[in-house]
View 1 (cartoon, rainbow, N blue to C red):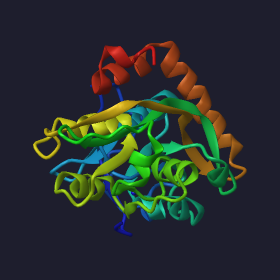
View 2: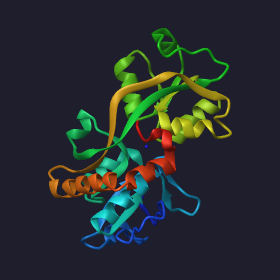
View 3: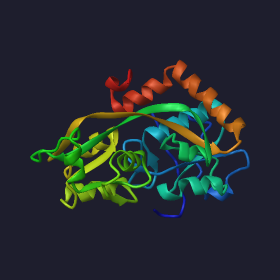
View 4: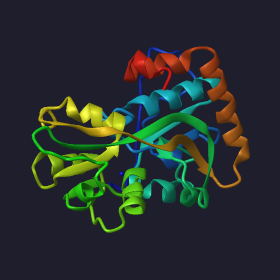
Length: 262
């Protein structure tokens, strides 16, 4: 979650009236002074991804666009590699991060967060023919495990099973490739990206092993330390899109009605 360049893209979500959101493909540093510059990874489907034409899509992108529309504010959304996304925010390249970022004590030392806009769980993946029980510590400790680095998944694994040395990757897709091509026995990941991958050709012979791992993981929007004005605007807009049904429509579009009460 690696390219250091920023790609600004027009994103389309839900057919919402996103007239307040910018469609400018110019570089981030040339945005208008009152434009909110939003970073997302663009490589974490179904939350955020890059389309073949270079535009950005996904749940995070549609949420960001809906919030900007509600605030009647012009926004640009740019792709930024995961490892560099907080440094880019702190360096002034962006004003906010909407990229399925978990609120952690470590991140709270660097950025401020809005209210949560999504609750996340973790899962283990392995080949359907492989016996793997994630409730059995020895199964985890004896497996060759892959994950995306600098994520809540890899952090949970390190904290819960410190003797395990996973194969960490800069992107989720690289970790999935490790698992799919047999270079790893098991993978730990956020549940919804895992479910998306299981529907792919590479993931069709794999399955979730065991139940969800609920660690009270919440996704929120990150802003620079002390930028309460911007976080307050996001919080107000978030409450409004939840109240008027926009949020539920975005959830259903990307995850189905079964996710509405989760």
